[in-house]
Length: 172
Ligand SMILES: Cc1cc2nc3c(=O)[nH]c(=O)nc-3n(C[C@H](O)[C@H](O)[C@H](O)COP(=O)(O)O)c2cc1C
Image (tube, rainbow, N blue to C red; front, side):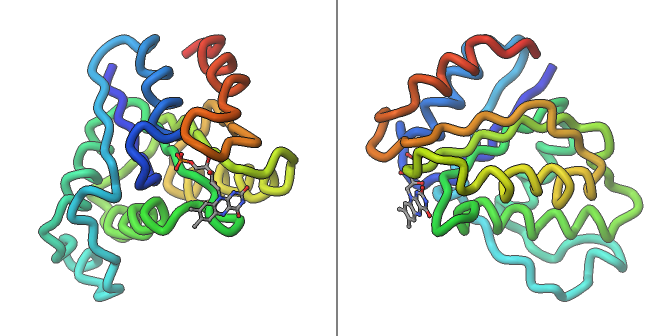
């Protein structure tokens, strides 16, 4: 089994990073983290080249999408920034366009585990996070099998205890 994690937080050893590490402790097979803030990840140009063949971007975004195509499980981890996923996380999602426009490439059947972290202790962003199951994940043929939200998580490692416990109890 191959699992990759797309980490949308710029903070190394931050809350997303720590939760992904905990998840990987119990996963069998190959695991790899991609820190989206640290790679060469360019925006989708909307040039439509992917409709005629392939994406023209020769960056790490392309390599990450290729790794996704070759994985069984994709962990999508992001902090909540102003009520939404981080810009780094959204940038890789926009790059999914190179697959949705290309009939030779498909993420159909890939499983997704969502991890979100937020300082807000309440349910303010639950609806937004739930909506991602439909768009972009189901739209791309992927199935969200688990969602972990660390609420009240501000400083690094603060307020993530419940989420760590939930991850420990996950049956994957
Ligand atoms: C630019 C920015 C915007 C943020 N916006 C929100 C927000 O809208 N709601 C919230 O609850 N927390 C917000 N936070 C707090 C982070 O979501 C929280 O600290 C999270 O646990 C960070 O995860 P990380 O350690 O993986 O980076 C924001 C933090 C930053 C830096």
